[in-house]
Length: 97
Image (cartoon, one colour):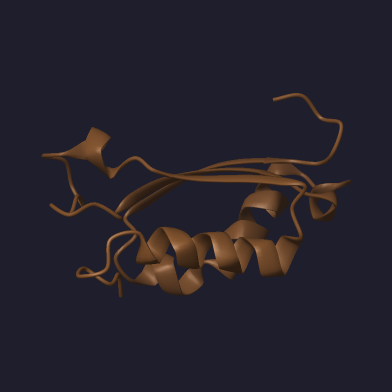
C-alpha cells in the first residue's frame, strides 16, 4: 500500500526496484498524479499515477508486451496497492525515444 504520510516514498521504491531489477542505463520516474485530480484512483497527496521512462539492455530482443510485463512484475506490490496507473516507455539501448 502507498505510504500516504511519506511523500515520495512510492516514487523512491519504484526507482529502487527498477534499478535493482533491470540495471537501467537511464531511468526517469515521474509522479503525474496532479494531472489526474478528480479522476478515478487519484489520491489527494499524489503517488497514484506514474510515468516511467527506462532504457535497459534487459529489453533487447523483447517485444513491447514482454518489456511491460518485466516492469509490471517488478512493481507488482505497488500496482496492487496505491498506484492506480503506470505509463511505461521501455527501450533497449540504441532505440529511439
